[in-house]
Length: 215
Image 1 (tube, rainbow, N blue to C red):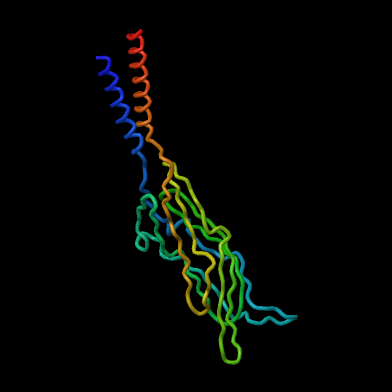
Image 2 (cartoon, rainbow, N blue to C red; image 1 turned 180 degrees about the vertical axis):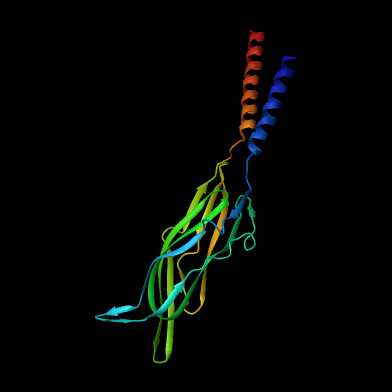
């Protein structure tokens, strides 16, 4: 009878252990905030090259409109452990002939989970005509292209921005964002943890009773 009680306690612990090991919130559903806290703005733009009293190559502009991150442009998406999703964040648009440098600030906001991937970057572009030919080019780099967030359920979310790419003058250059669910350390649900703890206490009681009987 005592052996049966020990076996029952062991079986209960095994079941509770399986429950505690599997009660993790793994998939994460993302809802991008396209009309609220997501933005892209230039903090500084300089165009042209100044030599003495003259400025050359300032007949150019650059813009960076935000991509359509609304519910119609980017529906909610769910990522399991190790899964990723890449989507357009904003687009560089260069117009005219000249040269320029810029700094910008951007923020990619999510309604769920409640995280904000803010960042700053800088770049330069130029289109110069020489002997009837045009030479175009540009570059953009983030200061912090990779960010990692830890959610309350233990999942780690990584958000990376396309970094170090060239900007072709007279054409558009899209900046993408990639969201990855890295998973995380198993975090048992509170209810299962409590049950498992009670099972351990009960098993300890059975062993104590058995030792008293044997002695």
